[in-house]
Image 1 (cartoon, protein in one colour):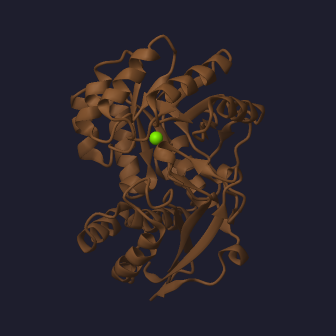
Image 2 (cartoon, protein in one colour):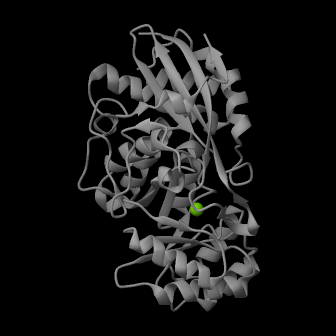
Image 3 (spheres, protein in one colour):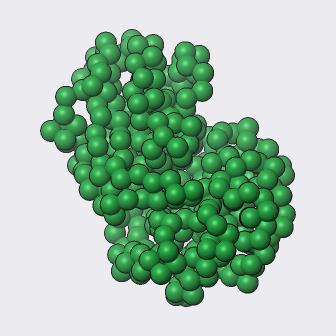
Length: 367
Ligand code: MG
């Protein structure tokens, strides 16, 4: 089987909450998502999707995805999409770095492998494990009162795992954490995510002030050394996200006992192939995970669900239905959260069928 053509589509996905805000007042109103359609000489078409959270969250941006695809996709024409290791080696040889560009292509090739073999991607990734996958809800940074209201709204939708966005002025962040924590019921999970934004002296103040609260702290500072320093000053369970950008960093952080949980975002590490490798390493090392991505709609949510659902339940700290944050459906069969949980589709491949009218005309066609 050979790849004959790759079509690239751009889709705007307005956020259902209007605006999403995180550290330093960064915010976006619309996901700028990129969908690839990978055509083969066997008549099978695989789909992938990648959507950075605007240009200032990770070193990734939407126009960079499309520019990178124009550079990279020609090297995959004529290749067998079922040979994921070969596909990934070619991508790494032809474009250094830029894992987010590779993510959509890698996901589409997994879709083709599943379609060709008649089995689901979750089966290919190890097999469906346990019950449905729990999703967290991210709560935009806002006044403490409005964040408590937002948590109540999300609870009414079935969510009981909240990741509140902090990473501003420390006294206000302490007030945000205290207000939301006081509003939680038994069994609910609270994560305070500073998204790299505190300086160490600020993070040190916050962790001391909230030591009595049962919560998880996520990525307080920008640098690894700074995060490690804060990790050693708190007894709260610790999550690393932005800094864990691949297997080497995961191994280093594990050797330093720098975290209890890591967030694996498909596009941050290069797609399902790399994310599966890190998932398996985490299982071997006893590290729980949030398996997710930075944004997107039904195709990327399906990819997330397949990897998460094929992960042992004890290691699934949480996951994310990224399609639940926006108002546009781009494919039939994308997992939709129900009571705060999603399930991997059971059909062959990713189990999604794109709405071609929503994707519109390709912005780029290669091959
Ligand atoms: Mg995070």
